[in-house]
Image (cartoon, rainbow, N blue to C red; front, side):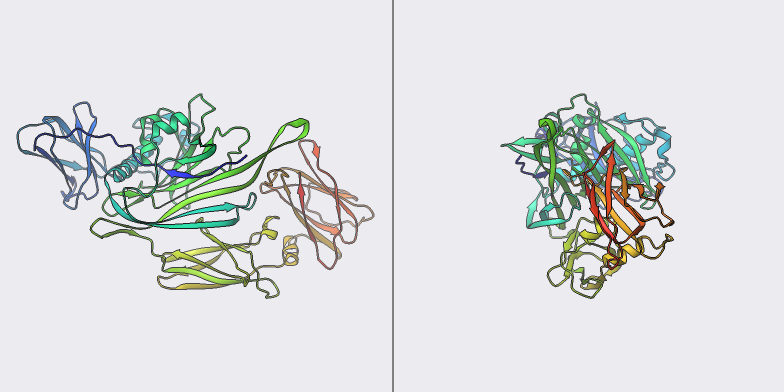
Length: 560
């Protein structure tokens, strides 16, 4: 099955406003109620009598939003800002060739996300959340403010962006980067990525077929705010990340049509400031041939000093699927890999040249990776924890990660042979300083060292050795958790302290963990061992192996 994988991060669908024929204006001035100081970056609206938005603007350094060329009519002013209670004026009439001044005083919001608990509204998914006492409504209101400002930025701004767009092919099991291509783009643009209207996505799906290929789409602020999206999704209080100081507002589809590809996800907000940080999402209803647990993406949001919002980074991961025939000619889908596409904004400037946001690539981390004997080790995956940026060591065992701003980073080193059995060394911390490359030399432990360490806390006799392994799905190459793993042999009758579910004189039994890995300690060397796994009563093909005393243990992958 050939599937072309692409992404278009969406922008706001613009409706043309009627042209004013007179010169009357409205000047809204937004100030802080407690101190009367102007509020910079508040989103100010001009509403008609029915409450529909006629104009919108962000306030300047003096707290002003000027709407020029307004039709003669009755209006109301409104202002909203994260961390502030929304303020509105009374109705006022615009007429004649004049400027109508209006003042809005915004009070610091009493809304606090610090005390919210997930258990208060667990499993309750609410359409268009509202209600003073509902935690989900309080969180949605703050998220809505940020999304509204982001949507306004997309509509009104014409910034000069420097962006990097990348395409990656990933390993189906380890997600290691097998191929990567980058393209840099620079120039003035309203937004740096293509778009589709929300109504199109809701009607035709977030995954659409175009010319025989599948195209995956991600939502932006305008889509999440649209009536089409709010009418077909409900929101719930998802979870709280105490360590990162975040609270999650989850959403999922509520429509009956299970044939239209859709999305579910979580909006993450800062618990202290209520600012929107990022959206993570996954795809639903992709059909029986496409697994959805790894299909999804992330869209970050960032507030600029002037109150505008941009998407500084985004990515989408899409499965590549091949469908074969299994037993009784049943369809058997197999994930052959993943394609990840995404982009980063390196710099944003106003038309006048002032930098709003700049992600300098003047810092980074470089180093070399060697094995336990000091030999240079190529092909080790090196990445920054919390980022999708990763590289592989070259033939000389060297690597460089660039494009990092000042800060402290954790660098993770992954050797595929060790990661297959659940062994990933702890990350190394390095500080990045502007204009410098931090250096690190990493020693990958040998398999013997890993085997000895795996059973270091287990009592065992001489010539008794460990066996590490993993149970993997044969056609998806994914970990199989909860599998019963049985190792048997004959002629070894020494009583040892085994860590297992059951033990007898001829074998041991255990269960694979959530990552599919398992461990046996104290197995005999030189004996012929038979190893099998059982899942839902179905036993895998038995395999035989021997543990060499010189190796000090062994590893084995069971494929089902």
